[in-house]
Image (cartoon, rainbow over all chains, first blue to last red; front, side):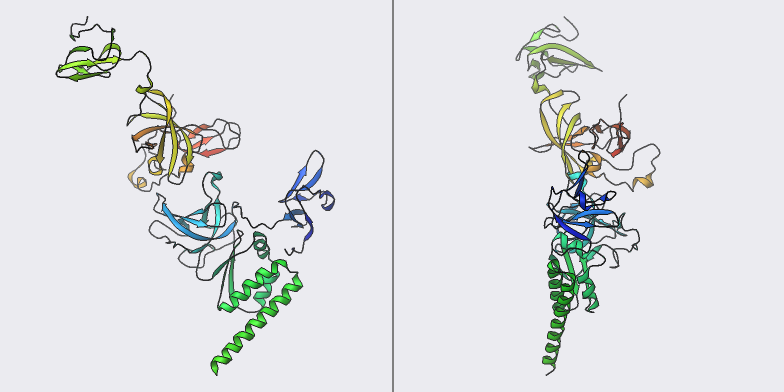
Length: 263
Length: 213
């Protein structure tokens, strides 16, 4: 997979990485400090990367998604489970994890017993994992703003301007969790290039590997989907060239179709 | 011989099933271990004959000497002690180990406590006014009980072939004994809805039973 700019070397679980990390760094996911031998070992397979000045972690790419607290995920509503005793309904949502997650339709901004969204089977939602229920029950999702959503405006579920909620229309594709996290980087190249190409689209990226994509034309949707999936194995320069080429081909094809129709 | 009750056997004598104990009068009625037929009282179990005096009636009772397992039954309205096996969104699955009157059961019996029967999250106190009573919400099962907890519950119904139905919806019912999630220390009830670990001070949500002192 394409490394982020700060990734240095590939590591496997058990690799001794003490020399590669400055003495006073913080260890993130995938790194473990053994106090007895005073060595740092990798516990995950991936790319040893640097987050800030002094935080190191292992960038991992897994196809299997394991829910963690406050993950922001895209899910598909599978079925209505029943009432929750407080005037709302529980829905089972597929987030690509080992179990279906539970979403209550009272967990939406501004939702009350009398004014709550009615989720349909097959609907796509963008939600956050609000509780893992200690493994005793399925993970719970919520479309309410959470502890990590400090700056977001609090919009009612009825306006579609909220942070979380239903995703209308569009397409859903499955990608690996590593690619999802790459796309969420603020400096992600492929999304920057696609935005610069001035085709209108919107994406919702779930760290669970579900990617929701919506654009004005199906041709653009295919281009965006291909560009994103290809970017997983390309360098930045290659990505820029690829996006330019794909957009050019798509626009040319669309122009040809328009010309053909006008004749 | 107690002449008031006109029994054919002495009190505290050992009777066997089929023994005709006496006549059935308004004041002399069959109690546990006996039955009435054609105006007479008969012993239906082997044991000691005794009389339980109730306001105006004498209950003729035959008490088996040993604690037979068959006596330890679960009846509706009884308080029982149960252990929580697992929880789901709609109910908690528990195993009843003992009853208030019958003592420890020979085999644990399966039961469920439905979410609606756990009670409301507005505590019922003498200061609860009717307005707030309309705002009560039901407990989330996982916030009320956890697997491994011991609960004191009341039998609501004999249920179906698979399980009894219990309720926790009274102030004195609820979690009796629970271990903290992290350390496994025995927790102490802090309030009707909180238990606290004495070692770490961490609080956990439970529907606590009222302590009996």
